[in-house]
Image 1 (tube, rainbow, N blue to C red):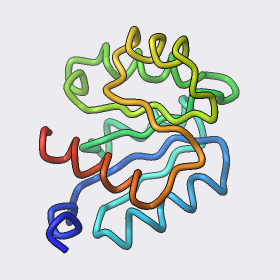
Image 2 (image 1 turned 180 degrees about the horizontal axis):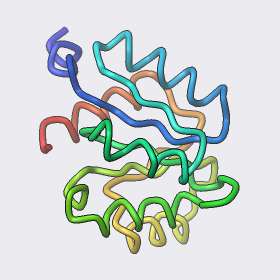
Image 3 (image 1 turned 90 degrees about the horizontal axis):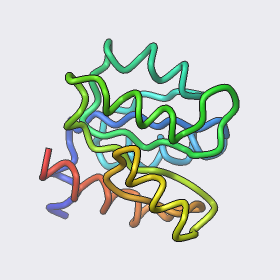
Image 4 (image 1 turned 90 degrees about the vertical axis):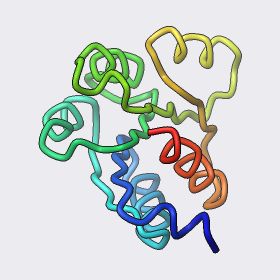
Length: 130
């Protein structure tokens, strides 16, 4: 499978307050050969992003302390990470949520629960463009 091969060594950060979502994303990504960095919320992610410099970030919207929109905006405002693709994760699939995600600089929107295929195809799309 050539798509899986192209994902080798892609570094992906998954920001989600749900341990279940973080773990399932990590399993799918590691099986595909990605390096995975996990963060429990926006503050945790901002503390880790400079050290790990991910190629792609998946960011949950509804999180305590710092929500996904604020986290995405802060990542995109940093010149070092402005071009890093950020994919918003949400169980809500409304037009407003998608528009708000675009306004803060997100590159894509993935609805939870995601499938292994939808997660990996999103990584493959953005890994090629990164």
